[in-house]
Image (cartoon, rainbow, N blue to C red; front, side):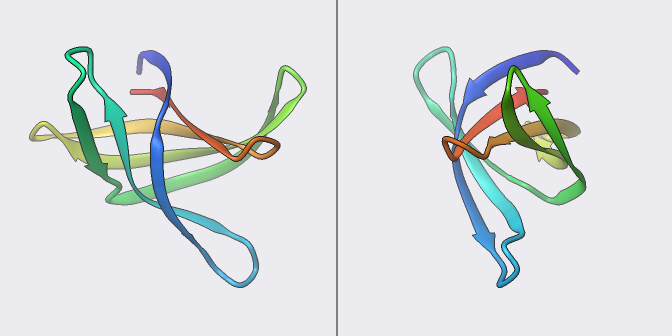
Length: 87
């Protein structure tokens, strides 16, 4: 996986206990078009502290451009921002 670390627009839902479940996200391409990717499966969820910021790391699987890919999404708890970290 290659580190990308780009901010994304996320659609997610939260259950009554506060667990966040990502559904799909949008990312801007180099040619300024927008790609929307549906998350097929969340493989794992871990917590980490990066440069003093607490983050939740989601390892996910989706079909991107006809190929099944695994990628990492990060959710920064203090600012509520989503990042496509690795693809």
